[in-house]
Length: 174
Image (cartoon, rainbow, N blue to C red; front, side, top):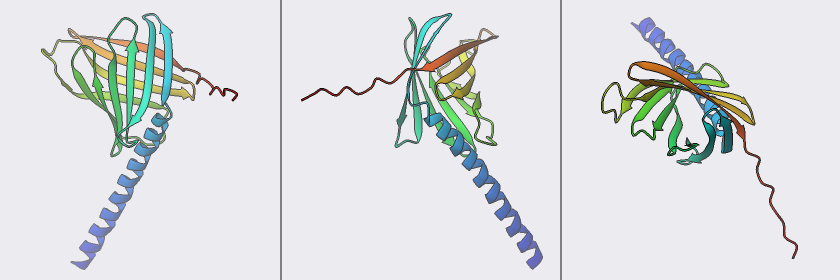
C-alpha cells in the first residue's frame, strides 16, 4: 500500500510541474502581447484601420480598440488563462465571440485563437468571428488574420499593422 502512495505522489508532483510549465508558457506569450501597448495603423483594401492597445485590470488584461475605416469600433480583451490565452471580442455587429488558443508550448510569436462560443447571435447563420491569428512579426509590425462565418460561408481578412511612431516630448524653454 505504501508503494502505491509513493507512485501516486510522484504522479501528482510530475503533473504539477507540467501544469506549471504550461502556465509559464502562457504567461510568457501574454508578456509578448503586452509589447503591443500603443497605437498601430494599417492602410489596406478596406481603408485605414487603427488599433490601440492598453493594459487594464492591473496589467492582467490587454484591451484592443479596433477602429476600422467607416465602421463602428470593436473591443477585444486578451488574458492569460492557465496554459492558454483567452479572447473576448465585442463585435460591432452586436455579438461576442469567446476564443482560446490551444495549449501554448513556448513563447510564441504566432497565436491562433479558435471560437469556443458566441454570445448574442440571433441565428446560427448570422455573421460572426470563428478565429483570429496574431503574428507578432517584430516590435513594430503585427499581422491579424480574422476568420468570419456568415450564412455558412467562411472568409478570412488580413490586416497588416505598423506601430505608430511615438511623438517626442516637447520641452518649452522657460
